[in-house]
Each structure stands twice: as structure tokens, then as C-alpha cells.
Length: 135
Image (cartoon, rainbow, N blue to C red; front, side, top):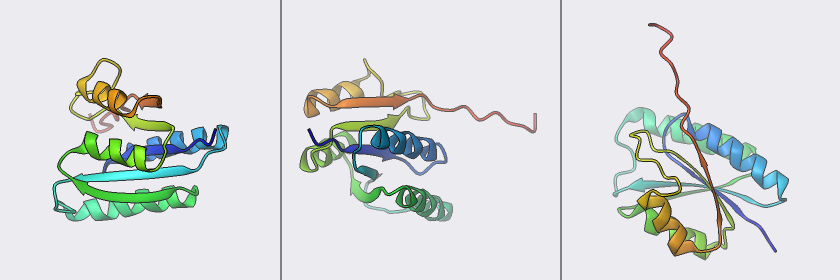
């Protein structure tokens, strides 16, 4: 079987961990690495710092040999599902969302992805809590 790893990222520093996890997985199963960011809506960037962080994340993923993809959509789960099917992805690496609405077994988003994409391994990384050092 030909494996392919997809890492779903957002514009936040924690995405670097997701890319590293996806890279390690792709190396362990000898699979190409794909990195996907889906921007909700049609506006590419709400904040000026967003473009710089996304550029840094894409550069990091590219340095690791990943193929970087950027899409805009109002339906994130459906767009991820379509991308997975169109590219024959076998492994998906995603993270918990910052608001606690985790994409994990039992959550509606996780179940929606799992039911629509069938036999795929989904790795969910818990969100890393960065403590305030100034306190």
C-alpha cells in the first residue's frame, strides 16, 4: 500500500508541532508529507502577522520535504474530506482546537471526518499549553 500523510494546520505556533509529528510519521512509514491550511471564508488574512506566521509554517514544512497546500472554504470538514479523497491520503495529523472544542474520538467534527473518509488513521495531538512566564 502507498501511504500518504496529511497534516492539517492553522495559523498558530502550535502548528509547528503538528508538522513535526507528521514529518516523523511520514518518515516512519516511508510516505510523502502533505501540509494543508484551510482558510475559513474567502479572506486570506485577518491580521498582518498571520501572513508572516503562515509563511514561516509553510517554509518549515517545505524544509522537511512536505508539499504545502492552501485552500479557502466555508466548510472545513468537507474540504478536508475532499482533499483526503482526491489525494489518496492514508494518515491525518490534526490538533485540538484552541477553544476546547476538540477534534478527538467522540467529537462531532472527528466523527464527521471519520465517517466520510472511512479507513484512515487519524492522529490527534493534544494542545500544548504555554504558560505565562510573566506571572
